[in-house]
Image (tube, rainbow, N blue to C red):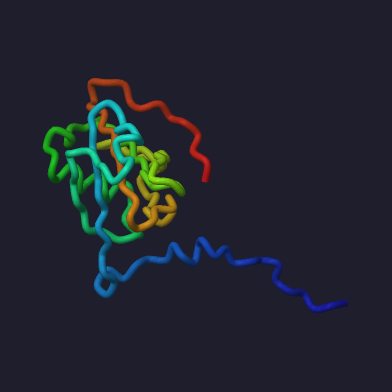
Length: 150
């Protein structure tokens, strides 16, 4: 009988998701654009343009959506109310000068959710991409949940 060998193959994406040593790793600049009730249109990012309401956050690839929610809440007091939804999307260039928007997760102030621990790395964020956040106040309907391909 031949020797038993492990059939487990280590997933390279899991290797890339190891914790970042924030003391030794330089943070990246995350350019965030928030709007209330809707995402910005992807066309607002085309040809080198960006929406006017930019929030700049220095963070790391292991930053979670919950962590980003907290940072946005720190600078926008009106988003601190319990039940406020944060719908995150990555805006990235395609092969032309056009941009595409891809939703990556939703968090809610005061509630735990499935996307809270999703990191920029898990969401396949690339340095240079933008983050677009649709903020829905608690007195409005939360964003519809759509299946997200990964």
